Length: 350
Image (cartoon, rainbow, N blue to C red; front, side, top):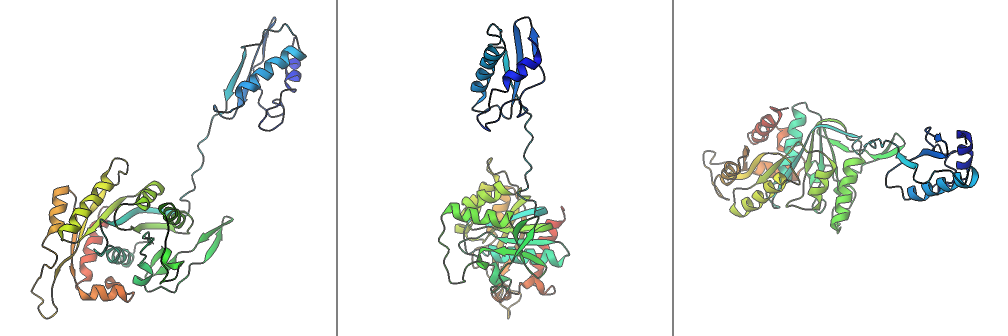
């Protein structure tokens, strides 16, 4: 017996996955050994869990016995080898390159989370950073209104042979929201899987580009969308927004716990206490604690997280949000200072 006889015999063995013989397919390793009647060699497979490994090895043994020598000692001497598996290239976030990705979250609705997210994004842009904002609140998208671009419709652009969504840009902030794709009066009735899929598409199939800060306006509470975001992007951290009201604080506590959960593991950058007090324009020295006093500050202390800021209940903030002109555009406005103070704390650490 000699090696070429073995090779010719193995041309009769076909790999079921392709229908080609194992020699033509390059599956025969260059390690044929012949010692008297003893024959040994290896067959290379792509992966260890290949369903055809055993059947191909048996067929190879039988081919040697049939086409070379019926007395060959080959059974048990044919071994399987496996190609080194290279890790697949993950280009999931090829078009989203951000130094900081921050989730702006709240335990419950109605605490002003979206207003905070909008003003922080615009304030960061005003400070000269490259900023984007994703409205991840599928069932209650509000960013198109707050940016004054309700009628905008994102276009598709072709990049690397793929159709990507071109974010809308306003006030120096790139932004996307499900609100751009449905009518303003149309309810979005999606199950959790559909909502999560929609958010993942906005994250991975949009031309976000190079960013310093990517803010995600999360839906209130804890949901599938939160898990989808955490699993899709590596969050730098989360900001939790609450009012000083006890019922809001309980939900904020749960929100902080969610991010700190071992399965989530996202740092909580701090708590923003919104609607902390009300000061009438005609009585600028008076503070009325409509929702309670310092509840967010106490919660931050209890949980060992920073208190990023306390923002009063100011009519001009509400008017700016409703008119699509965030208050931070008026940098000299007293109410804008609260947001810029928070931005300065965030950017102090890069």
